[in-house]
Amino acid sequence: QVQLVESGGGLVQAGGSLRLSCAASGSNFIINDMGWYRQGPGKQRELVATVTSAGTTTYSDSVKGRFTISTNNAKNEVYLQMNGLKPEDTAVYYCNAQARRLAAVRYLEYWGQGTLVTVSS
Image (spheres, rainbow, N blue to C red):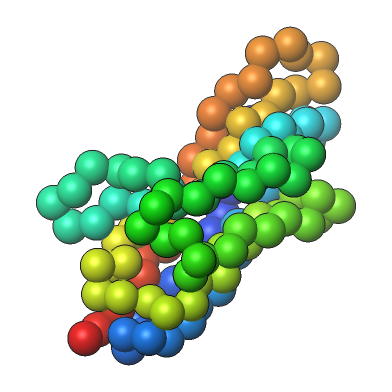
C-alpha cells in the first residue's frame, strides 16, 4: 500500500503564491506518474498537472504558465508551485500517483486526502 500525504494548502490573496507538497510512503514500491488534481466547490475533480517518471510534464490550460509541477524522485515527493493565484483556483487539491509493488506487474492509482487552497479576491 502506498500512502500519499499532501501539505501546503491555505488561504492566500489573489495574485499570491503557494507551494503544495506530496510525499509518498510505503514499502517496496515503484512510482510511475504523479500529479495534482483539484475539485472546486460544486465542480468535478479535474486534472491540474502531471509529471511522468521521465520528467515529462502536462498542465491544464487554466494553470499553464502559472503553476509548475516538479518532483524529487529520491524522496518520492511531488510539488506544485502555484503563482498568480486566482479566486477560481479555490479547490481541494489532491495528489495522485500510479505505483506498483516491486513484485507486481500492474500499476494502481493512489490518492492523497487532499489539501484546501482558498484564494480570496
